[in-house]
Length: 274
Image (cartoon, rainbow, N blue to C red; front, side, top):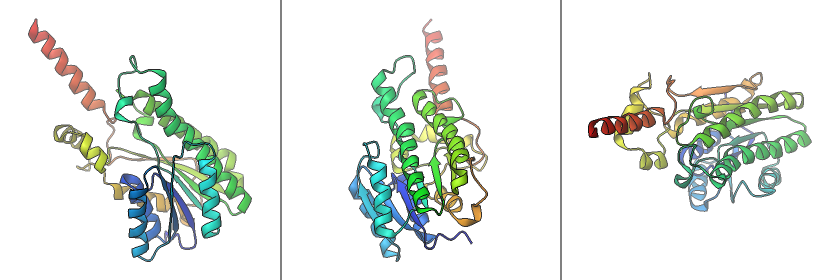
């Protein structure tokens, strides 16, 4: 059950953090995995781990936002492994320089975040769907969104807006492409403690987040991969157009507690100063 034997999967941003966890889980389930991302070193390291376990992996470094990048990845998957059955849109983030209150962000900050997190995700899904249609055997597309897409996301509002757009596109793509046998779903993780998140989030902020999670811990990169495997395998053949909230039961938006803590602290200091 939940096997991907004989299937070919692409994972964008597949070399580190959540993407690495997804790549390893897909390979463990039997898929040949194509790993895409901007940095070659983490992709090669993840691919080496897959191959050491007897799996198949192809590394394609590059910028997914570039013209034709996704189509080239899809074509390479077919040429190397003979097909394309699953595509996981995991690439996405917001650089520290693009973080700030909505009243202050400029057009460049908006475009960089939205282009990576929504525009490139759509055109990657489109490229995958076109190849799946041509092959005539359907497939599964999984968009990694964020709970920020359905809840307030202070200090990175354009990121939340982009993820909200991806969630809407996920539902629409599922409707338009369903007759082709292509299923489209999303996964909206809460706080996942990747190396990047661990470096960015203070222990105090992490503790506040843990207090908001009913299951008593923050996410790990390996928490997302098994759900991707399920959404890509044949047992989920009647699941499409849904976004799964993967948050440990938390309903508190990412950044919400930290933002209110900062605002309330500033208010108290202002009142104390008189």
